[in-house]
Image (cartoon, rainbow, N blue to C red; front, side, top):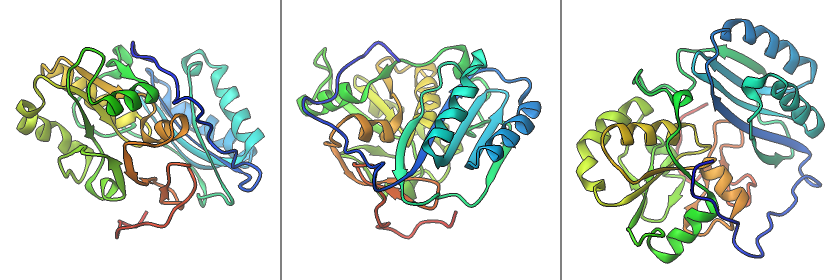
Amino acid sequence: MGPCGGHPPQGFVLPDMSAVNPVLNISCYHFVPLPDAAALRDLLHERAVAWDLKGTILLAEEGINMFLAGAAEKVRGFVDALRSDARFADLAPKESWSDSVPFRKMRVKVKREIIRMDHPTIRPAAGRAPAVSPATLHRWLAQGHDDTGRPVVTLDTRNAFEVDEGTFDQAIDWRIDKFTEFPPALRAHKAELAGKTVVSFCTGGIRCEKAAILMREEGLEHVYQLEGGILKYFEETDGAHYHGGCFVFDERRRLGSDLATEPLQQNTPEL
């Protein structure tokens, strides 16, 4: 967590969906050096299959990114087992519920990057950009500025088709088609961000973390990442200042601010 803390809006409680939707879905990532990623692949695949989980785990030298679904005790047990490795002790999954498993199989893959940016100097494991909690961003957007009086802008780092399903009110959207387009888009628009507090955001935090580090590297001073992304914002706030839903890369496709499945509003690529 970064220096900007906060608490959920007073009186906000996310409804308990587990009684009607028995499948627990988690998304989680962690930037940490994994020189043994190839060996981990087989271990984690065997363990996930044994616990009857489905989803995708991506491993790379820079860390882990995973999306899993199954019975709650098995999903949480899998995460607890991962945390027994000191490198994964700080895993903090975002949780949501569904009435069925939204994945067809269990896949564990080794990649060059857990989220491809093609910018090798960005190494989140070496030091994170400052983060802002969902509750703090909620407050900043309500008051129209950060705690120093500086204007706040939100920067959507997702692909254009994801943005079309929902985003923060008046969010900056550079209409990128893939995350590797973010660095040149930033350089083309950097002057527009000068003098503002910029909060980068994405679905679960992974893209906005790399984006915030790049913006700092490019000389922008007042840059934060939204801790946990849109899904954590939905989990910890009432969803105000966000319109539409959040596109997710599983068979649910779109979640509302209550983290329940919603119908898609746009034509989106096939998974």
